[in-house]
Length: 548
Image 1 (tube, helix red, strand yellow):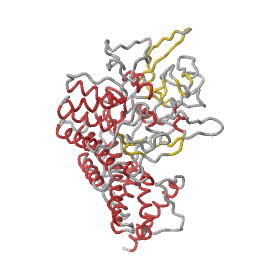
Image 2: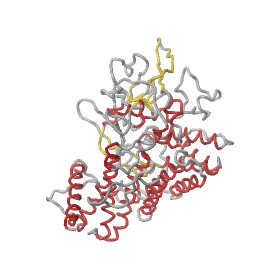
Image 3: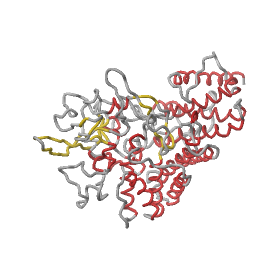
Image 4: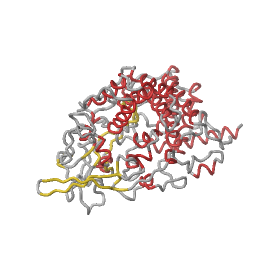
């Protein structure tokens, strides 16, 4: 027993040492620096300060997704975008060269490390030195939310995984088989329910020093997304309507709190800018907001303070934005779309989320026509599609030589618009295109003054409109990569080339020609990530996902 106790102490000390590095550069509520020498496990749990600090460090597993390497966003691993760097790590998702020995964004060890931390807290909090003791249920609720979130990060990648609902001692057998997908869903839902039972409703209910912590709405939002994934075709081959109804009920529980709102169209560009709109009422949960301008440097058009233009939206994404006046897809001959003036009278979100030729950025006109200042073949970072990403970028930021201007950016994990679309999708699948489905899709559309959906849609037609609404509203936010997979439509959307728009100018006349940018490779096995071979070597009972 003495050796096991010492091993546990060493394990805790190792975790604290790791996080002292993480915390050293952060001075908000997630900060917690141990600077008073070696601290034992007993020291941690006997102290109110140290126990709270341990929980604070558990938040470190929340993933900020602005840079998956070389400024890449996961959007460039879907049909949303192309990465301007042909040698970037993200391209392995698209050329079919990823696998157990060449993984990217797997997060396997990272998530289990953070799950273990939350389990240690849950196992010790009740008898810890937290004061007043009335705070213990709320703090444990935060840990339940984090444990659920980290299991979900694994589940959405791998499907069935090993459930870790306890910390494991060094002497225990860790060669465990994975649990079924349904068992993992049930575990996440149970943790979300436990969290929701003891947490404040929304961020607005938190004191200023605690804003950013988990809330009831965050726990219910995670439950909503989890059950939506569980009801989707990839995980619900029998199309059990009861699973869709459970997903609808979970999303409606968030809506019925009546404490979240959609920002106005004018506010929407600052949803991700906490310098301008800190902890705004559309954001349900987000990571720490760091003062950065790296997002702008990585993604701005190339002529702006040496922007690297990494995320180039595809023509397929641009085509998804409907016509503003009619509310119809541009493929509809009665939509009013004019091919010789393709960006006129479009859904306002096109201009908010994507930089097109002739639009302004930092009060200067953008030129993505061939030979324009933002389409320069002599610059290796130039757009590959004729477009640049605008979403997330703060135009007030400066990243050139001289004084740097920064803004506080979190990565938004859950926001209210997603919940409305979750509810509409699940309800449509469970009951068909009933009036409530229209109500909640139209709420998202009305925010940007888009016409309401036409009445009389069939269930199948409504499904297409909802899926397109998610594609537009949630673009670049890590949803498309997983939405297409859970819909089991990867071969349709990801196994075909992506396109761009080649724009040529002759005098004042512009000519638009769609062209193929690059081929893409996708097969059914890619609906799930492969388990890293190193993990399979350590745990022989962990069976590789099918066909990897």
